[in-house]
Image 1: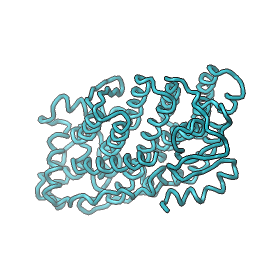
Image 2: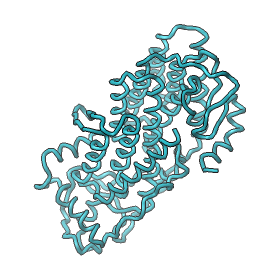
Image 3: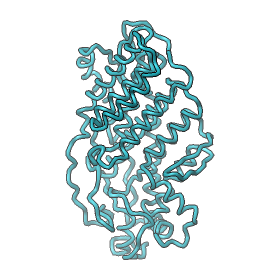
Image 4: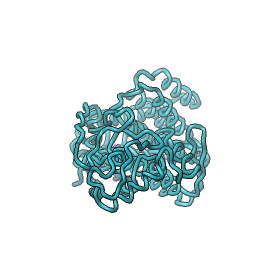
Length: 427
């Protein structure tokens, strides 16, 4: 029995006590009620987009949630709740975690709206007024009656149980203080402000789909004294410097583009555009966002597991120390500065590589690899021939900005692909 199945077996008693059935992840949801036909009209997936936008808006506030809680967890909770609320009624796909008994004719769109509302209120109680207005706007378009009330009940039940199941996932634990190393290759805080490392415990948070954060942990990186590492670091030294003469204007623009907003926000906005432009049904919309955000959430967990398993120093540290730390192939530059400030966590694997690859793998699996798309961040738009092209530019941008080596990024790409493919096989 897998770790996920064991966990669900333990939870079965709790779920059944609340009047729910709890099949193993990816199995067919069953209960005593006959299957119902979806009441969602084509295009109704836009309400899913609106809730996704609402979460991005909430997260734009500087104090929306503790800085120790990674935002991808919130996206996963929101989208998983909407997904299970809808399939509890439509029976068009297996449940993610559980199926709620739904009366014949219950409104799936109402269930999704109620589930989204209740998850966001639970996560961000200070934002309740705005979230209430969003729900009122959505439900006002649906005629009152038994079908509407049944949908409300299904959505509320799903949200309540999902929040309860995730309340002990380790995300609220106090992160341990990180002790910098002093050996060649050891991570230590980076200039100019030398901030404390972040998400030091996130690799131990319970994943949404994976059996553990270490399930796809990449192999250890090459030694810092190796020729492979020297070549990768010299590439960053030349291309990623603030005063680089080899980086092209377009590479500089791309580096700034992919750093302008959280990369998980950018990929969720890509999904918003796909769902909206395709006039997606409710069922397809919840599937797109559930696969995307469960993949991103578990990739973040797996990425931080690996980052703090290997605690590899950042390029700025390695370049400034030069050949004084077991790197004979590097000529040091104590004043070297990257194009953009370095993120406060270890270098291996790269976050943009992992998260963008997970997103691209997920979306290509649904829409096809050669799907032309535009990606917009902070008012700037870039166009790509396919999802992989966008993901590749995202990780290359971290070399151009002086954040990561190609070694970091290749490990991130591998990790993101493995997580996304695993999630797709389960959902």
